[in-house]
Image 1 (cartoon, one colour):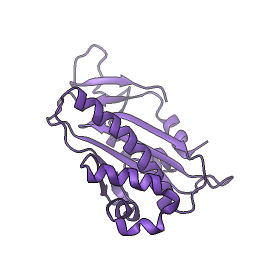
Image 2 (cartoon, one colour):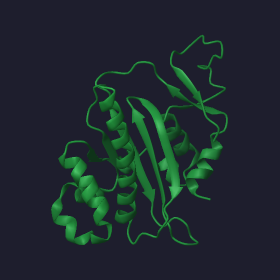
Image 3 (spheres, one colour):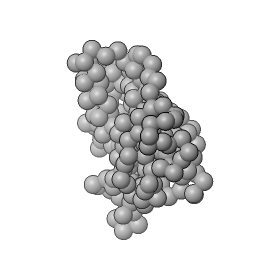
Image 4 (tube, helix red, strand yellow):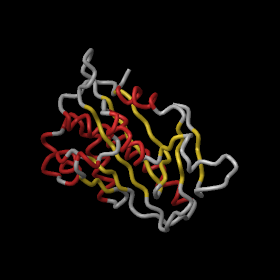
Length: 202
């Protein structure tokens, strides 16, 4: 059982809050992270991502990778590639709907991954993940994707991949707009707060 799954079990009795105010053009962004070699039995990594449309969390996942990675950069890049594919689908959908949106952004706290995505000089060192490298680079060159480095402290996807202290877990849970059912802002009569409530069973 991955650490992300353990954390999600703590969130029983919570819901995802969607604020009603969304600016245009629509902003698509995702936080993507990996806990390298976290499974002590087979040293496979746990990956996770949280995707947002404006301020609203619209999709998230956490799972153990199928193969063992030889470096944290390799496992992070696999995770970025999967997230890129999902953002590409959202990009295509919004284009078909003729909805204005800005270039999708993936936030990553691994500087090596960001450098590889933007710098062709790294290619000779990454032949074992060549397909993912070319896929992401193609999206960046077509201005259909941007990969941005962030400090580890600002990595919201940590809540999906790593064991955390209770205080850190609660901070990141709030960043994802996951609220307690018992919150005083919740009114089943529709009386307060404004927004959309999506109840989740985790």
